[in-house]
Each structure stands twice: as C-alpha cells, then as structure tokens.
Length: 441
Image (cartoon, rainbow, N blue to C red; front, side, top):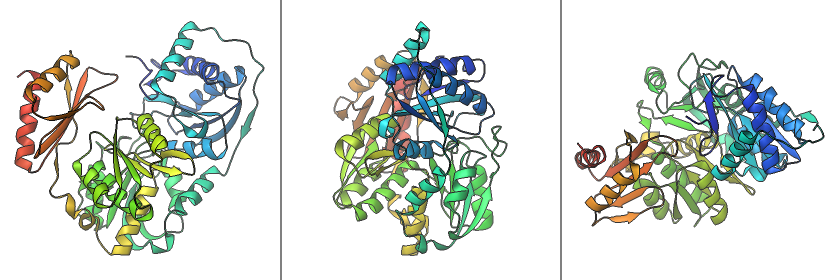
C-alpha cells in the first residue's frame, strides 16, 4: 500500500517510511512548492526525532531556510506556520495511527493544505530521484509559540466564566500532554488527568479516541465528573463524554458549536461534511446561519471555508475548524473551552445542551470491503431511484424520514456508509437494507 495518501503521507516505520524516504520527500517538497522558509515540527513518536532530522536535511539541502519549533501538535503547527509568516510547513506525525506509524503533513502559506494533486507531484519527484543543486539553507529554532497559541485560543472565550466544573482530560500519551497542560493552566476547574506522560508507545490507550474511549467513559462515571475530553495523537481532533459517561458523536458537537458561533457571528456560514446528521444543518438554520455541505477531508473543508468566508466548520470525526484572521484551520482546544463556557454560563450539563439530539438516530460509519465500488454505487442509485440524490462526495440519498451517504475510500477498497433516520427502528431497518445491496447478500 502506498504511503502517499489523499491528504498526507503515512506508513509503518522503518519498513514503509524511513529516514531516506523522508529526506527525499523534504527535497521534493521544496522543488514542488518553492518555499524560501519552511516551519518544521514533530510529535512525540519514537521515530519522530530521526524522521525530523532527515526532513530538515532534505529541505536544507534543497535550499530552503527552516524555522524549527520542535515538539508540537498539528493544530499548534498550523498556527505557527501562519503567525510566523512562512511560505510552507511540514509536520512530522502519523496523527491517530498506532505507534509504529509515522508520516508527514504539508501546508503552504497561511496554513493552506497541500492538496492531493500536490502530494502526487511530490511522489513523482521522489520517484524520479533527481533534484537540482542548491545552496544549503539555514536553520533557526523558535520557542514560545505554544504560549502564543494558548493566548490566541483563550482570547476567544471568557476564561473567568470557567469555574465550578469537574472535568476529566485524557491526553492519550500524545501531544495533548504538552499542549493541554499549557491551555488549561490557571483555569479554575477541578481537573483529573489521564495519560499525561508523552510516550510514543501509547501505553494508556491507542492514539485514536474515536475507537479508544471506554477508559474515559468509566473515569467520568467513577469521578462523577461533569465532562470528559480526549484528544487524538496530534490533537487536531477532540472528543467529548457527557456527565453520564456517554461518548458524543462528532456531528452533534458540530451542531452545538455552530449554535454558539452563530450567536457571535449572526448570519454566518458554517461548513460541515456530507456524512453529518441533519442535526447539524437544522441547528445552523434554526440559529440563522447558512449551512454549507462539503466533501469529506480537511483540505476540502478548509478550501470551502476560505472561499465562502465561513465562520466555523466541523467533521463527524472530531475535526473542528475556525477562522483566525485569514487562516482556516483546526483548533483542538477551542471546542472544549466553548462547551465548558456554555455549561457554566447556562448552568446546564452537556446532555441537557444536547437534549434536542434525541430525535436524530445515526448509525455511525460502517465500512464494507468492495471490489467494484462504482458498480455498487450505480446499484444503489437504481434501487433508490425516487430518492433526492447529491454527489458532493460519493452518493447521498434522501427521503423524508431517512437519509444516507455512501462514499468510496480514497486509499482502500472500501465503501463507507453513514445513515440516519427519524426513529432507531427505522435506522436499523435501513442499515440492514442498504448493507444487503452493498454486500450483495
């Protein structure tokens, strides 16, 4: 399987992705993007120091200067690439993949993601293996950017309102150990920490809280906490557990945060991915905003947000996007502070803030291994010929009492189904029905 994905580069170290490949990619990135300055950061994975050194060497040998911010989360990296006004940036991380993986994320100026086309061009340049001679770039180390990021994030909420709540924070041994510690410093909350030791082996739980959240659910119940918050390995995704220990779907959080953002920016545009519950669209409309559905993936959402000057964006997978001046990027901490501020100001529990989600019954994402994905999509289109159809990303089908999206994976022989209905029974019935068509059984 190729290490060159739709939005980034990822592979198992050192068999699929190693120092030699990383150096070559660093060179190719400079040839393709032609930056004068590149901000470089890394996460805490065991192989990240070696990969970092190789990328630095490749970028410098190809003639670009480097601003090295050292250990950082991906959202901090995006912020740094913007405020430091660099031409481009490279983040060494495999995000939520297991510890044996590593990889690279790329941005251009203003933290704009390098697109899938750009990654394919980098792949071609690495394959050719020929790079023009260049003068060696210089390297500068930059400290203090985390404090700037924390200050910029906390400026967007009323920190004084955050008091009287007991919360559980699960850093998952990832970059939240570093970043959350600074973000929550001085906040008058009763904080219980889980897995707050940086460790690339991820001993506490896996780096993906979407599938590793049982421990925080149990901890919230044991401690009778008001809220649980967990982050993935590089903290560009954040997840929530309510006071009952229920894990909250990302689209419900998107809808809740959209309401909050539209109080501050009346009539604003909100971007959400096409898989989302109708709760998101309904919340935006009821709050006087403009809903804008998008293809799945951070590069598409950021592109649409920039084009439409949207005030906020969210994905079902726990990515939440904000406008900061003229940057559009994830912030893994602002959602947590906004939800805490709502809870404190309105004196409501998270389950009470989300009481209006009870009429939305979602399946969650269901994956199917399929050889001929296009054939199956055509079968679905014929079977549901009377549905309202959209093809923003895969195939979306809509009826008055249920809807679904079926989209092909960019990198695997998979079809991904997300379905919602107005009752749990109908949702389960339609999941079985659509599944039979997809599998042919």
